[in-house]
Length: 164
Length: 109
Image (cartoon, rainbow over all chains, first blue to last red; front, side):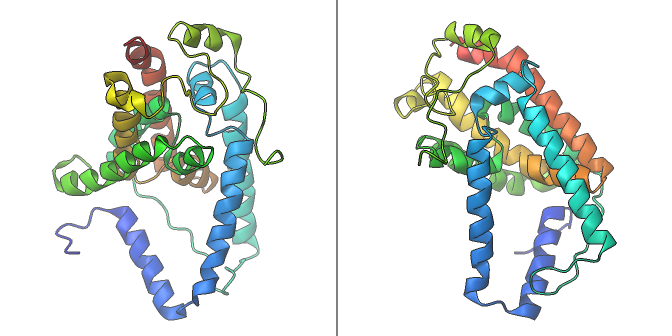
């Protein structure tokens, strides 16, 4: 892929991952850990009802504490995890040190954030939960997933012309 | 499967249930409203807006913002990143605007 202007911070992160993989050349079965974590994540999504369209509607109408409680406790657990990783210099499963890169502000976080918020309230799902919704048997959400993927593709197409 | 899924219908705030019943949404068997999100509904304007346009906004917005609820709201806030706080606030503003001001018009179609 030819990059004319390097404004895509996601791509940079992905590049970094590629470098790591090049150094480690992991075996295929090392990817099973992602499958295990993904399956657990999906179960938690469904059990906690965070992928429920109804819970999302309650959240945005301030009619229930449910979603605020889940996201809030996830942030607290995340903070403790990040603190522990930094404090004890915890390594990855392959012994690499874990680095946290500061996020850089750009206007995309405002415009993109607003657009994502609009979509979140319509579909009742952020990107990950779309997969979980399909898994609950709502097969039509596969169309929503394809549309979301199309959205990321169109962003790539328009990136240089969008304000950042 | 009984352990992993909740066999009972989702219990929602009665105010929301009343509002949604006004739009013909009474089926709480799934985590999504099957009354308005199903294969035949895709061919209606309402279904197209809910599933296709909604999905597009999720994908486009997430990539534009450089992260989603996991990347910005949970992971970004956990690592005390102020750009993630701005993104999270914008997620919420967008959601409040849609759910309270725009979605009622879509559901009324």
